[in-house]
Image 1 (cartoon, helix red, strand yellow):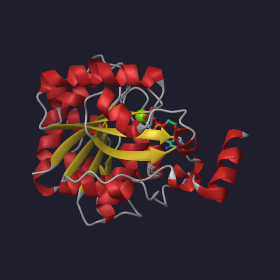
Image 2 (cartoon, rainbow, N blue to C red):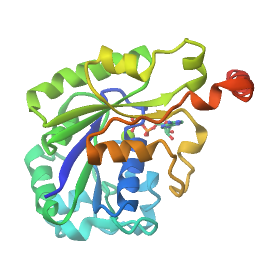
Image 3 (cartoon, rainbow, N blue to C red):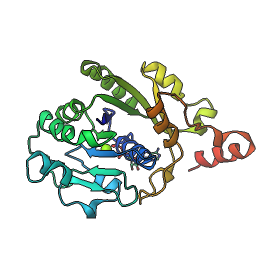
Image 4 (spheres, rainbow, N blue to C red):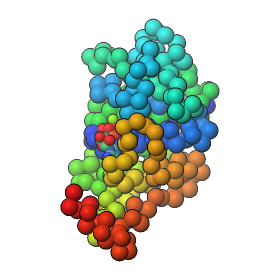
Length: 256
Ligand SMILES: Nc1ncnc2c1ncn2[C@@H]1O[C@H](COP(=O)(O)OP(=O)(O)O)[C@@H](O)[C@H]1O
Ligand SMILES: [Mg+2]
């Protein structure tokens, strides 16, 4: 049976879709069979983020509403053959989709997969509960910004009622330059503040999303290993900004 993991945050734009997509691809490249499900029926964009939009015949709502079998809605990724994308490309946001119906589709796919990642919409209303109800573990994505931290805190509190086997934290868009200068909360401090263990740290870099979903940033490797082994090794976002060369990079980053 697959581990079903919802990737959530409360706030939009912090990197849920990015983290869910690249973490899925990293695990798929390691040989795990992975489904990446778009449960953001309103602002669905997993198809575009993973570059499979032209390959979609059926989507998750077609499977839920019985127009196809669940397996037919999976789009096998051309670059990562172990990654199957369950898009919501055609879905109409005004349609009512119950948490149970999404859960049933994912459960029917679960026996032949290792992981199912569920990309959650922003907010903490109906769409959040529908995505969360299908999972048994959660990854909360946040940035070091105060507004994101507040929303992550609320989300973590809400997740408590679901009694997940694991809730962990990914700090995204981490600024190594600000960390070295002592001007940003460190991922460790964020983890302590939110009382949630860190699964990974991803730097803010334009190269994270390369537009073609081809190169995977090295920050996702330790994150995927942590998920598999339960260890807590983290990518060092400050490394680039220490020493003389690092000082120059800090200066350049600030003048952007
Ligand atoms: N680590 C990062 N560094 C730079 N840009 C990022 C990073 N993570 C995400 N982004 C960008 O931020 C925007 C929002 O990311 P997205 O994953 O769509 O957030 P969400 O799903 O939480 O709304 C996208 O344009 C994405 O490419
Ligand atoms: Mg998203």
